[in-house]
Image: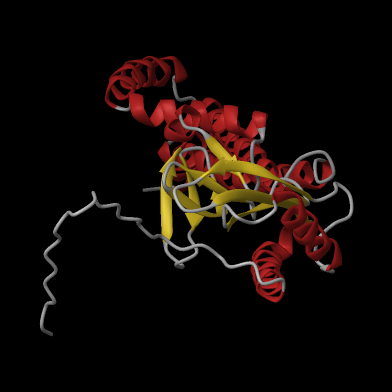
Length: 276
């Protein structure tokens, strides 16, 4: 092979085309990273972190594909053939991946609606956990038992989502059973005083104690109070302990399940004592 043949191979041969395509790939990768980072900085104050992550991935792949297609075109490769083949392949893949596309579309809607963000604690059906990742296909939850749960975005779109950490304050309700012989107004005033004295309960909104129902063995009252979200369990346990002690000091017995048996006059009842 002489120098003229080598020059022609470099100028018009497959080596040059391969180099052009590789340059397109490398340039697309670098430019995609730069563009995605710039977009992330520009949207840092307007969008949530998980939304920025998805936007960065979309801009990266968009720039990358555009640069690769440009490299292929500069290398003299007929893109119409590739576009036609890609169209046929996309139809076949579309039928085989309807669930995947449904998850992607659902993920985009979730990003726009923003019912939760990374770090929120949500409840989906019987599953409760902290959102650790939100992608186009699925959402990852970390449960209180420190296990990972992957939920497809299509399932999220069709389910009721309860976000327990969306707001700064939470309402707590304690159910209190008192004897039928107790004065309801006095017990309500006593419980209100207890709730007002607790440092963890908020003054606004104010706490309330109200009648709930007539139970089998007790009159049931509901004590509702507001606390800071981060101290929910602590406040609930503290309030329950304080209310119980206050009722005991006031000589108000906490009812327990019991049954009253009535017999007809002169009725004989046989009682057997089981040996243990």
